Length: 182
Image: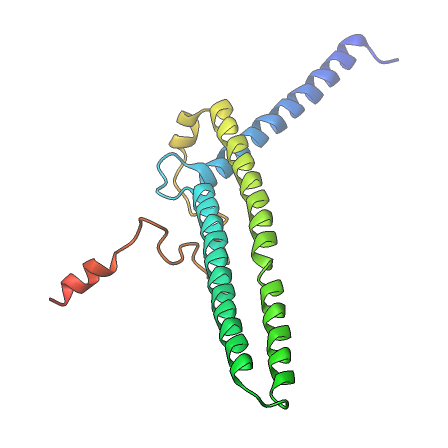
């Protein structure tokens, strides 16, 4: 027969064990938050990711537009040459050129889909950042600030730096570089 005091002691030990596990889980969360969202860190991984993705979308759109403009210009010149040439043998070649240029135009539509997908990823990154900010609030910024500033686990094993070409308004301008040589 189990005494109620033995049963109570057993329940107390089980509860104590669970509270200790919960406390350790909160401590682990603090350490992981500090690695990604430490208040003293100079790097904000989330805004950097969003900025880089926005820049990818912008540069992709610029490149696609440049390709389409150049293709359109070539197409116009081809049409003019076709009108000027009288050779029946050359006419089918212009048709092939026209078909291939239309293929280029169609292929440049990738930037729309790329931009849409990148926008969705940015929304998710911003949502995750908001969730982490809420966790920092719940856990306590003071508690996270007290933890050592460590290298982010996001950078481990990644030999490609997140920083790419300077974002709009950032970095050193060409004028600044030119001044060095004057």
